[in-house]
Image (cartoon, rainbow over all chains, first blue to last red; front, side, top):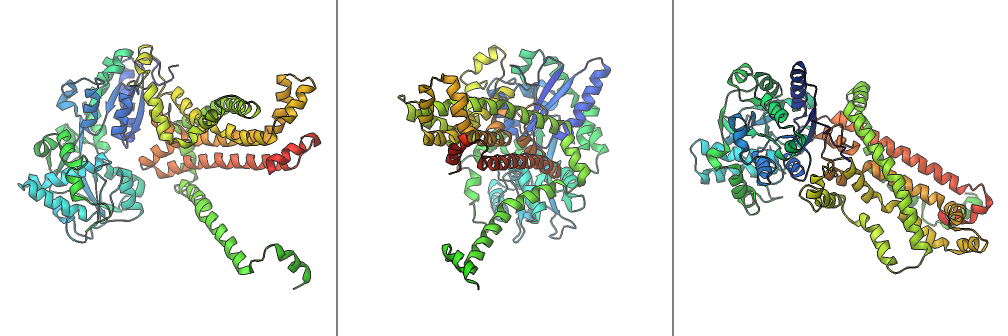
Length: 319
Length: 293
């Protein structure tokens, strides 16, 4: 009855987040080519979906060899269930985070509202399109980026609360997910500015035609991590541990980092980052740990029911 | 106005403007709610040209999704035919304790949200589920693989054929079967010669509905699919995936394929209905009247 992807360690299943398909298609092709020249024929299968839903499926038995997510809490969720190693952060270099991204602004061509930095988003009359932090990782990162930007300039949590409250008053309606937000901004032409991941900018240009929007780099923004882990439960059964490790390590090679950069995903390699300096314009990046302790802590304080976000945002009562 | 048409109009006493208004409303509603979205699907699908449209359909992952979807339907429809006939036969031709409970159970999948249906199977067959550890130990993969997709589709589509047959067979009663019995027919003969000819159109109609749902089911399949490209991605899931990846034209191209499958199903149903109102064998005529009513 085993009809899933796995027919032996000549294949790997990578369970990943949405919108990473183009990146992994190129990366997988490069990895398969490298392995073939070493005499090993193999196939990489891909599964894409919302990062948290994917983590849930892996916990419930989806036979992933590796997970590549865009939120560390989703890997922690698997670690708590013993599906990936408890010390997954130590299993790969740089805290098992081979690539990162950050939150930027997209504005209409020519930037008619003159939006330059975070403070401009809270100005009266500016309409901000952003994902609901209760329903999407994209939205949580946008919220934390806004809050952290105030703290990063030396503001207090009270200042941050005030700023974020005013910012979310400028949100006409919260989008459910990243795709929904982009649709509202570009297809329904709602809003003056969209807060989204840096790597979305390239997809947006591809689908909606380049030149319709400009990317704005604020003075500082949040560093978001794309963590990776080997699924111990699967590799123990299939004997694919070595192959899985070699695949994830490929993400750290110059070739892997280069492919990430081509898809708008920030490489950790300084050399590659410098080569793509026109795409990844330097901006001051702060981490979740710096201002919130950890993502789990931020989740508890800000996004759980009755948390800060529930107090500042009342649906249907903007402004 | 001549007397004859006025005489004919007696049945509908509404003034002409009211009739036109009502007809206009009906056509407007159908246009807005049914035709316009259908047109939108095809215009969006062809937005990047016929070549891009075709490329989206013949791409290996889309082809795999099509075959998977057809395969699941090919598996589920015959199984549900057997189940539907057996259930309807048991419920309408026999008296037994717990019959009312059985009828309720047959309809259960209609009242359960498909997402919940999918989750039930994850809770039973998932790694953390009821049978999970037993299945993992034996290396059997049910959910996040083809068996899971087939199971939830069976669950969701199981009432369609039974629900078509039960009211009809109840209306027909058991007289003809009893007559056949007194003439010496055995069980199989009664079924093939009396019952089946009486229900064949309802059976076909039920199978068509069952097939449409089996190919179009999204919620339940989404929960148990695992979304492995080229492996466990059905057509409806493939549409969502493409859409989420900002490939709207490709998403709508695949959606148009589903729409075409639906249109094809409707045409088959229409042809079936036309055949049914033009009976060829006089012997079956009275029963056919029963369906049309």
